[in-house]
Image (cartoon, rainbow, N blue to C red; front, side, top):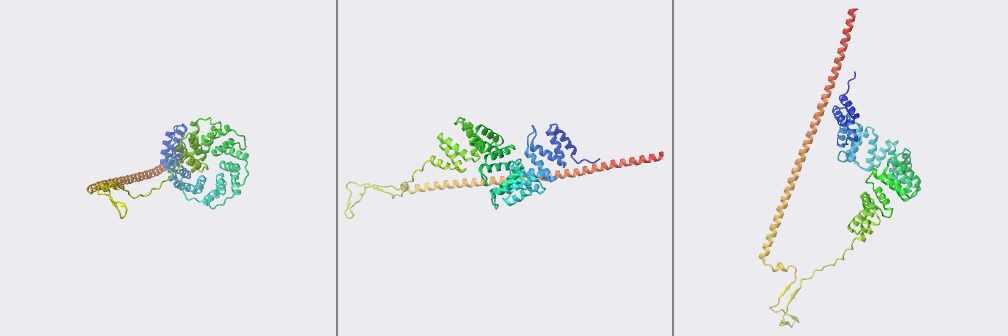
Length: 488
C-alpha cells in the first residue's frame, strides 16, 4: 500500500465539507493540511478566500496569506501570479506596482502566460518598472499566438510609442488578426478606426456598429457605450434615444463611474425638452465631470450659471477648462468681475499749518510773514504721536515689546521641544513594533521548522511501521511454508 502524503486525510475531509456547503469546517481542514505542506489544500483555501462562495464572504487578506504560503513553500507559479495581481490592484494589500512586477517576473520565468502578458503591460505603461516599449514588444512577441499580445503589438504600431514609428498598415493588420480571434479589445479598436476614419480608413458606421456589437457580447463596456452613441446621433442607423438609453444603462451596470455613459444618459433624459428632474440628471453629470469629461463639467457650469450661482458656475467652468473645453475660459471671463484700477499713491511731505494773527510782523526783505511768538505749529507727519510722547513712556513700551517677544520665543522653544519629544516617542514606538514584528516572524519560522521536522519524523515513523508490517507478513509466509513442509 502506497503511503499517503501528510495532510491528505484532512484535505479529503475538507473537500467533503466543501461539497456539503460547510465552508468554515472545510477551511479548518485545509488549513491543517496546508500547515503540513499539502499544496492542494493551500491553493483550495486561497481560492475560497479569494472568490468567496454563496453566503461565505470574500477575504482578500487571508487569500493573499495562503497564496504567499504556496509561493514560498512550493514555489507555485500560479500563486506568484495571483500575488502579483493582488499587489497591482491593491487587493488585500497596499498597492505596490514594484512588488507586483517582481512577482510577475518570477511567474513569467516559469513560463506562465498570464504573467508574461502582465509583465508586458508593466513595460508598456511604466508601472513598477521604467517604461520600455522595446521590452514590451519582445514580451508580447513571445506569445504572439494569443490575441491580447496581438492587440499590444498593434497599439505600439498604432500610436508610435517611444522609438516605434507609427505604422498604420501594420497596426490595422495586427488589429484584424486579433479581431479574427474574437478578442473584444481588438474588435473595439477596429470599430473606433471605422467610426473615426483613422489610419487612412474611410468612415463606415455600419462596420463600426457590427464590430462594437461583437465586442459587446463579451460585456466590453466601451463598445456598449459606442453603440449607444451611434443610436443617439443616428450614425449608421436611425436616431433612437430609447435604444441608446438602454445601452448606456447596461454600461453603467458594469461600470457605474463610466464618464461617457453617465454624460450621454443625462443627455438622453434631457432630449425630451428638459422634462427630466434635476435630481436625476445632476448626479449623472457630476459623475461624468469627475471622470474628466469636459462637456459634463461645462453643462454643470451652465446649469448653475442659469440659476445665478456664480461661484459654483465658475468652479465647474474652471474644471471644464482644465479638461480642455474650448469655450470654458470665455465663460469664466464673462462671470468674473473686472478688477478695479489701482491708484498710485505718492509720498507727500508733511505739511506744517501755521496760524497767523493780524498783528504778525512782515519780513520786508523776503516779503514773507513771520510767525509771532504766540503762533501754534501743527505737524501733520505720521510719527507725530511718537514725537509728542516723553522718552520714559517710549522706553516702557519698548520694554513691554521685548517681554512679549521673549515670551513668544519661549513658547516657540517649548513647542519645538514638544515636537522633538513626540517624534522621539514615535520613533521608539516604530522600533518596538519593528522588533515585535521580527520576533513574530522568527517565532513563525521556528514553528514552521518544528512542523517540518515533525512531518519528517512522522513520515519516517510511517515508513518504519510499513516496513514492520511487511517484515511480519514475510515471516508469516515463511512459517506457513515450514508447516506445510513438515506435514508433507
